[in-house]
Image (cartoon, rainbow, N blue to C red):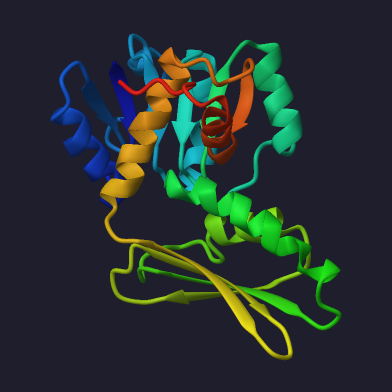
Length: 237
């Protein structure tokens, strides 16, 4: 697998290191010094991006023109024309893209927990939800893409708050508060290698797996859940 890696920040460096130590994988880094233009991307099997949202957005025309599958963890941007319209455009052109607000495989298990917790209104007359996320001081977008995904998965109103401090990899909390009890879901990212490993796993699925129903823009969590429900549907190499 020949990877074009967009961005060599903290997570990108882990992707580079992990991929570089894996037999059969080679990595070429693209950044401001070496822009990801379609001719330079030619010959790569897949593109992985951890660019900041605005930088990734500016690259989209060249990435689509390259016709190479894209796996991206970029956040803090809006898809051109909206997510659904952009996905349709990719599908019409036979292009496979996959996006994640968080490349943790465990986050997909939390997706199911959050959807169950979102049914609390059927049990409690008085209740409220809140989402709080904590990241390192250099993370520019707030709330995080993961926090916004959690609120979307919940399906009901929830206050979302953010905190930027130190070198925190990522902490997310969802709290259900009722008059007499409190329930909390907490996910803690302990090492950025988590996201690098998840991105490489996703790239393998896009290239060699059978979990994507067709071309278009796909969601990482839905990919993982589809594999879990298929039982043996994962490509593990």
